[in-house]
Each structure stands twice: as structure tokens, then as C-alpha cells.
Image 1 (cartoon, helix red, strand yellow):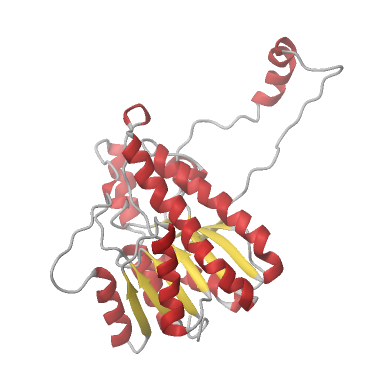
Image 2: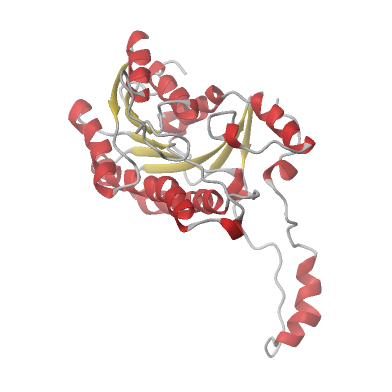
Length: 307
């Protein structure tokens, strides 16, 4: 990754630990000037003010100790004005913004019929609203430069499915659609947008329930997947080497890279003069049912061991 993003100014949200920290360190090691954004919240979103350095400041100190350039940002991604301040931090310190990595996240897992309004809103506001707000704050600057790149973190919980994560899954699938819309709308300005679905053991995945033998085995597999191994793909997608890559969804799992499919029609049926509920039941359903997707979760679909 040596100097693949030299001179670029990159905002990484949720960069105080885990995947975000790994991306921030890798961006700096590859020559970028980094805004390390993290509000210092717990996994459920509670902000704890402790004496001493914040998580973002610690990462900045790591980057500087290794000879890189970085500044901390403690603003929240989940507000329009605070997201503007995150991007303004890059402009104030470095005079431009070349890339945004929307990594900030939280979890409020609950089975659907028990999920509260607060659990829904708090997760959607950080993941989906946050990805929109920070991207929107940067978009006009990139448009004026005629260059830029967005990298958004999606999840197989949204792309495929998972138990007890209606809020997280909906937000993460929404992020995939948001990324595609950004790619379409800003292509003319040479601004790119892509997603990564990371498979990694981090503070967020450490909260996954592990009570049954199957769940315990899944957690043990996750522990093999280091958070730092997501970073090379993020650096690549920000670099000029990815100039022709936009609107895509990649998965990264240990030493494995996947390209995810995107929804397309898989079968169609016609009937004249027109369909009725009865003919749908008699003709359309048997024809289409063969192509139905089963109720699968991420580990059911990505069932092979990490490499």
C-alpha cells in the first residue's frame, strides 16, 4: 500500500478502534492525511467522557509516531451540522477533501417484535443518516475538484439477512442503495462510490450472541478474521488505481475478497389478457416459486471457512 494515496485527504468515521482504526492507520501509512473521526461512544451509542486522550486522539498519536499526518474529530455523524463540521475539519487543516470512509456504527440488537422506537432510530441515524450526512457534506467539494471517492461499510446482515437486527440490516441495505445513487449522480464529476461488507472480529461483532453450539462456532470463526485486513481494500478504493471502480459492493474476509451481486430480475411470467389473483395462484406462483430465495442468514450463504 506504499504511497497509493499520497497527498490525499481522507475522513474516516468511527476510526477510534476496530476496522476504522485499521483503515485510518493504513491510509496514513499509504501517504494520506487523515481526519480521525470518533465520538468516543460505547457500542450502544452512550458517550463516556473520561480523563486523558480520546480514542481518536490515540489513533492520531499512533499515526504521528509512525511519521504520518492526522487530526482528530469528535463530531457526530448523525447530525447535519455536526457532519458538516467533520468535513470542515479536513478543509481547515488540509484545504481539501478527497475521500470519505463511512465506517461509524452502533448496534442495538433486538428481536423484531420487541424492538423499540429508540433502538430503531438510534441505529438508522448513525449508519444510514450518518453515511448520507457526511457524504453530502463532502459532495460539493469533490464536485468542484472533479475528483473524489466514497467508501461505505455495508453488511451481509442487510445484503443477506440475520436474526434480531432489523434496524441494523435495514440501515446497511439502505447504505448499499445510497452508495449506488451517489455513484450514479456524481459519475459525471469523476466522484466514485463503493461499499465494503467487512467480515471481522471487532467491538461490534463481539456482541453477537453465542449460546448455541452453532453460534459459538460462528464466533470462533469470526475471531480468526482480523479487523486490520479490511484496510487494504479501503485504501485501494480511495486510490487512483480504482479510477474505473464505482457502484460496486465488495466483501472482505481475512485474505478473501468477494464481489457481491446486486438485485436483478431472475424470472418473469406473462399472461393475457391480464392477471387475476386466481391465475397468479394457479400459473405465476408455480413458475416463480422455483426461483424463490430461502430464509437464509449470512453464515448460511457464506458457509466456508475463512482463508
